[in-house]
Length: 351
Image 1 (tube, rainbow, N blue to C red):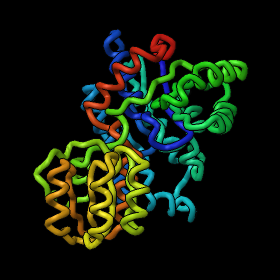
Image 2 (image 1 turned 60 degrees about the vertical axis):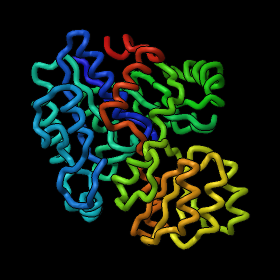
Image 3 (image 1 turned 135 degrees about the horizontal axis):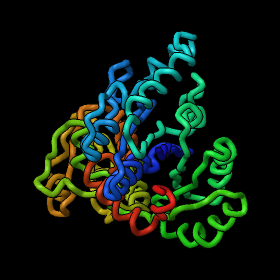
């Protein structure tokens, strides 16, 4: 049986979409595929209830009937972490729990896709970082990495040393146009001199970057005040806390952004609507803008969302959502499936 643990040195690199796409490709080749995420980290509360959506998506994408408590044997919530620090969790018992769940899920399977949680160091407080998990279930490891500067290679090499012979290789995901040539011509050959195989370099794909304002609305709640398309892509958020004139200079240097500011800051709102890279306005404090602002937003097809939360909380929640990106739904797995076929040596990973 082939067991592949998909890990990364940072969060939100595209592990879920890539792991499930690999599972689909293996199924198309006639393999019976199982899925597991030993440490559930994509949680929506800080209690022990299972709320990680990745295993649920895996059941849908890979047509599995596995039990959730086996697919996600450890709910790695803040409550769990605090208890572990206080000595309330037994590392040996947790390791055994993962092993028993893996044995049940892998029975009669040709391949097991195991998804890491957050960073490759996640779980270290209970001796269950990804290298520990790989040893416990005898898995090879694929690192899915986003590279923004050459210095990111330092962390990648540290992870490679930690996994040792279990490292199957690396796939670089969402590589920007400005970095792509360097990664292919310099980084990949350099890593090969360090015995680190690179199985693919996937370029940045706009449909996998950021989220739509509709997604943000679903997460934050609130009301859309404009009658325009709210499926605009947002890749970053800007905080409108300066004067209107300073804000305009700042906003003009960005693209695909949502400006978050107080509902009473009509000067900032007006400045945001003058910048072509601002795709949406998110107004905090439950305050609606003046009619002139709404009229201008309507004219420029910029949706306006009003939320009840304050600016700081809104920014934090929106940034968390954007960092996760559109990697956890059926559409994005379909997109990643195509990118894998085009840019990754799938044979090396599945054979």
